[in-house]
Length: 72
Image 1 (cartoon, helix red, strand yellow):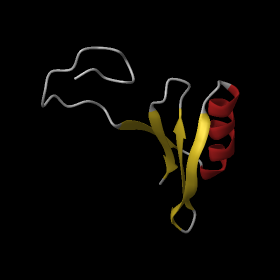
Image 2 (cartoon, rainbow, N blue to C red; image 1 turned 45 degrees about the vertical axis):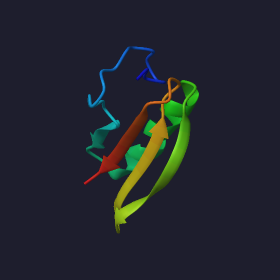
Image 3 (cartoon, rainbow, N blue to C red; image 1 turned 120 degrees about the vertical axis):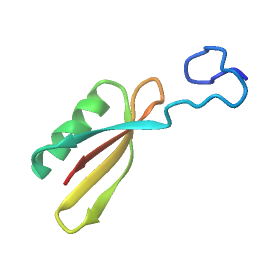
């Protein structure tokens, strides 16, 4: 099976990273983090709150990797 993200040959049954994340130390930094991804050529996939005052965003980097950015 050929990985569509990296072009590297992946053996059958092998696992790959689905997404990774960055935990913020301040919830108000989420806007700046999302803007940095968009400015670099990525895009916002979804955004919301896990609970009141606990925001998150899922973004795609320019290569299509999913990144979770959240505060807790």
